[in-house]
Amino acid sequence: MIEVVAGLIEDGAGRVLACQRGEGAHLAGKWEFPGGKLEAGESPCVALVRELDEELGVEVEVTGRLSPVEWDYGRGPIRLIPLRCRLLGGSPHPHEHQALRWIRPAEAGSLDWAEADLPIVAEWVAADGDGGKEDGGGPGMRGDAQG
Image 1 (cartoon, one colour):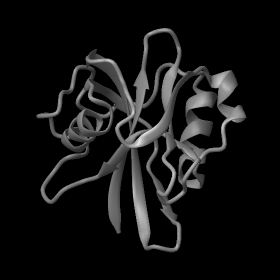
Image 2 (spheres, rainbow, N blue to C red):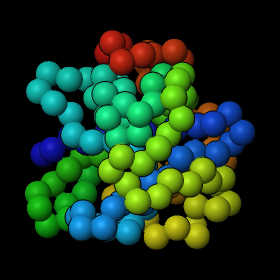
Image 3 (cartoon, rainbow, N blue to C red):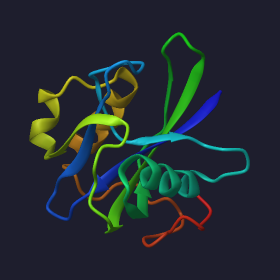
Image 4 (cartoon, rainbow, N blue to C red):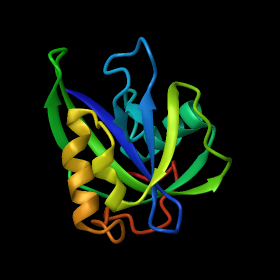
């Protein structure tokens, strides 16, 4: 099973960043939380920090996690690991996505989400965009933390 991280980047005003997959990509036009595959020996926290730097040009701090999701789009099963985080530096811009949008929980239903992200969206909306499950490392975990 391929492990993939997804970042719920919070802006401090109750919003998270949603990203629309680019044309020509698998699931083109669908919305998702940004992230990507873990590399060999990489923790989810380290992978998310690396992926968000590569995809959006931002530095983040992991602050918690939501429930993992197992999904298969017909290309083999994935385990999607959602991590809550906050911006430390940079302004998100789409390197691999066609659009970015800051959304509140009430706006989440207006986007056409990738199916694997739907349980994560539901959990975030149910928590009203704040709180979340602690990841055991506590707030302030950076990319070098075990996660």
